[in-house]
Amino acid sequence: MKVARQTPATEKVTPQPGSSFATERVVGPVLDCEYHLHPEYEITYVDGGCGTRLVGDNVSFFEEGDLLMIGSGIPHLYHSNEADSLSATWARSRVLKFSASCLGPGFFEIPEMRAVKKLLARACKGLQFHPPASLRAGGLIERLFEERSEAQRIILFLELL
Image (cartoon, rainbow, N blue to C red; front, side, top):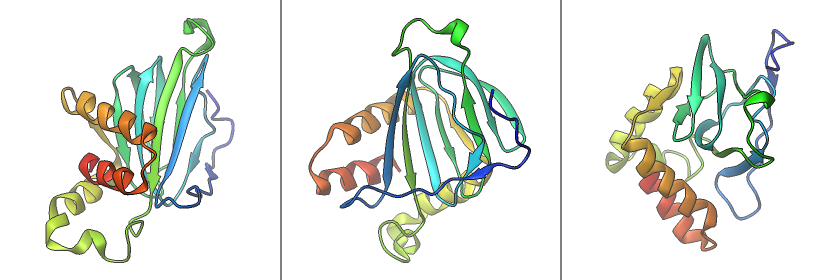
């Protein structure tokens, strides 16, 4: 587990051109990211592997099917042991990172986004979702990652939230 530094690194998140949010597909024998934080919200869906995650001051086990949402500025990392790896593509996750203004200033303030605004506020300490919500969200995330239409990606993102 890469926690050698006491202070988390600050990650700069840059969405790809033409996108309002960043996506990252992680595939390998292990999940092993640097202890870091960023001002964006993060949604991580683990679709392969298991290990330990550190979110804020909480250390917990993660496994396939886990869905976690964390708020702005929360230090975190995911780590799985190579001894647990079954193949070079065993550990897999899909990560979305987005700012509170990703869809325009004040978008999450409109009345129709009241429930999403509450969700974002609750994510300030991290939220782990339980099945069947995590499985349904995992399907939406998979579709979002495969979708090429920019408009459809926004629709899937809103549906996810």
